[in-house]
Length: 333
Image (tube, rainbow, N blue to C red; front, side):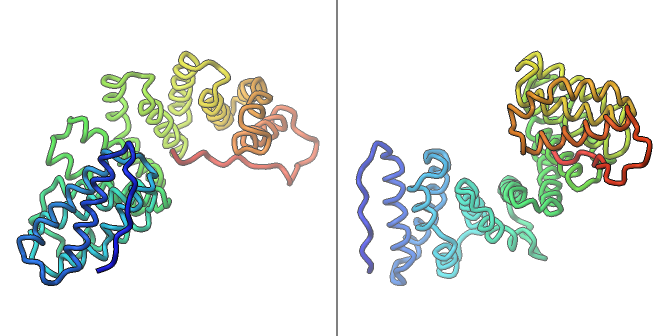
């Protein structure tokens, strides 16, 4: 049997112990002569090992990376093939292992681990719903980092359905999944569905989290984006003004979040054909935007484009300017 590398004992004793357990687990899997009871114990080690690592290891930790290598799908598959493990243990271990990969920002590995299991035609009808929810949500988060928004929507929708069954429609967990589902609708330009969900979510977060909570502010922004997508500009203006007022009260007028919200409101005024008001609001902070974000930043370019168009709207040239830039409706969340 290969010699295992030694580890120096650090202040992070918990992770060192977990790595030692990982070594035992790997040796157990690779030894065909180990009895079934020991193999079953190894499965328990795997589950506890990964679960503890998620709570104890710092994100991006080298030791956590080593832990993943020792508990990789290759060894996991060897174990499954060697002993008829209870399917619920397998499912939980897969979900927890996927969470470790997610913690390491290995999003493709999350998809490789979970997608076949979740999208199998027969599925696993006996799987506890809490494990299924963990799988769907971890996969959704990983796909989001890869900008696969259509697939994110499917995963988020399934997470929301399961959460409703597990916790009820008004539970905080369920409302969080409804919030993410509405965001998913917005990200795939299904704005009618998004605005059907966002107001309920917004009321909940305002009441329970407060108007200045980061999620509440994000919901205001996302709902405003969907209203713009539906050309309901007056409703978008109301939300933009509300969000800007909150941000200015919390951070001041020159904070990056306040400035980005101001740019959204400038665009909304453009769509409302309030050209002078939009120009004044944007030009007032144009220099600050360039200083805060950089001259070549997306924020500076966006505001510069808006101001150029607004200037020509207020001071129309004698001849049509075919090179005039156009305003694209804001999107995303």
